[in-house]
Image 1 (cartoon, rainbow, N blue to C red):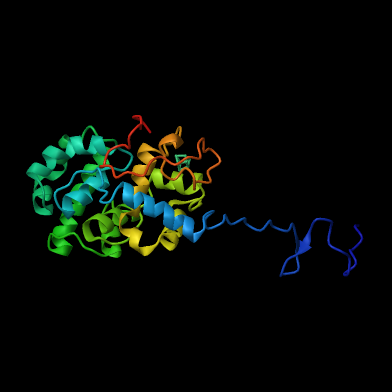
Image 2 (cartoon, protein in one colour):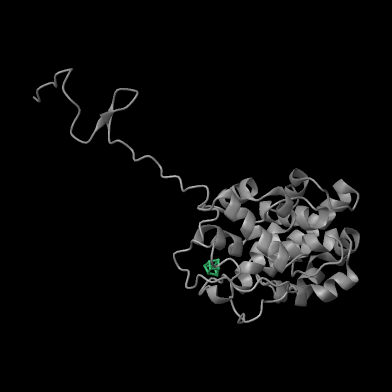
Length: 268
Ligand code: SF4
């Protein structure tokens, strides 16, 4: 029979008492990444430069009103903006309101968007959300996050894009580019898009919030690309603290249009 342990015996090496008195391995404290590697002055300078480079940035998804914007964003999940635009030009010409879209029906919507990934499910969502807009919102796109996210196929990111572009709200829709930049350069490290979103919203100076979403997306698409960042054409190369940075000299700060900055190569 095993000898009972003395009640004052020390816990086994490497173990500690938990609150309920049981012995358990001490859990390592979860490491929280720093909120940002940049000072307030550096963050201000980064967005000041973006604002000079692209004073009026626009999304690349084509739409003619808040409803078609909402549909375009729903269709853009796991698809390129160019691919969505190709499919929606004709669709939006014949159905630019929830009533007209609902009247088209799932099959006809599906016929138009067949070149987009997950088109069957997306056609179903487009019809369901069009019907919901007619039934619950008088055919208008609601301007509240709760109402938007209650629509079929509409998640937090889609709601953020619509709130930002259609209603001018200072939201931050974290897509693959923004998530990468937030983590790669240590601007807003986070394990989830929500974490990156929260940090960015907290840190970006209010005067830059309206366009920050587009600036970061365009920077990620044309300069700080996934496979190889093009640091030689980057206007924040002197401030950037990314380990992968290959250049310290910032590119000339000149206003450009919506496309790639001078010297950018296609891809990304
Ligand atoms: S310097 Fe390079 S890594 Fe840093 S933001 Fe610019 S492109 Fe990205």
